[in-house]
Length: 285
Ligand SMILES: NC(=O)c1ccc[n+]([C@@H]2O[C@H](COP(=O)([O-])OP(=O)(O)OC[C@H]3O[C@@H](n4cnc5c(N)ncnc54)[C@H](OP(=O)(O)O)[C@@H]3O)[C@@H](O)[C@H]2O)c1
Image (cartoon, rainbow, N blue to C red):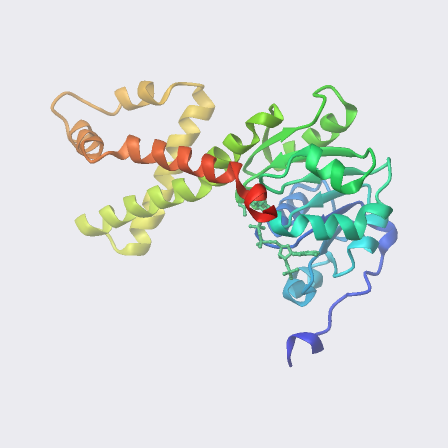
């Protein structure tokens, strides 16, 4: 059976129950849908996910999510619309949906590098627009999501904050800080994953099978992050508890620093921030 022959709920039944439309069912769009459904903020049947090739979302469709390639239908049947397409795809999507967007919608854009002003200009009328920068841990309710709106005090930003609070921790920031939040939190998932992968490779070299080493490294990383969040401490306070004089931890830690560990991390984040800042402009030119 080829993709176009697969059975899928392309006509989106049960539209009366739909509340949130996710335009762009790729990595982050699907992660958000999964996180919201798990959090019980929305039931699967209240989440419409769109993409041009909806057959790729068939599994989600069979799990009860509403799947379609019809962006206008999705927007017309929801009050919250999340844009989760690539920066180079946003103009086309907004052109398609702008006349079905109304004042009662909240448009949440997760699209990197595209400002609220850019979006309102593309829509051509005043709509409630909130930017959100989640990360893929949203699928398990562990996102660090930064949100911003033109006015911090609007009811709509409170609503959007409540929505993202159900799938992780949310921080309201100025829109000018969005590219930095992209680098630290959205790209950051990849940086920490690579650090865990590197730790597991070290573990394999000294003793353990790859799968054991990865599990041990991942749980250790989770514990380290958990200490900071639970105790509200500084990393160096927790590091001091692990580094005894002439001990093995400080020897390993210093060796990492001799090879530029902190410097590499910092340079990675600053480089990502520079790149994130130019994503939309480069696509437009
Ligand atoms: N991935 C992350 O961790 C992350 C985190 C925060 C923010 N973001 C931002 O979120 C956006 C999406 O990133 P991503 O990683 O999820 O990209 P992605 O996996 O490429 O997802 C984009 C999705 O948009 C769909 N799409 C494209 N044109 C469309 C249209 N006209 N109508 C409906 N759907 C359409 C694509 O599917 P079809 O080709 O089938 O249409 C694709 O599934 C980007 O702007 C990114 O910067 C990503």
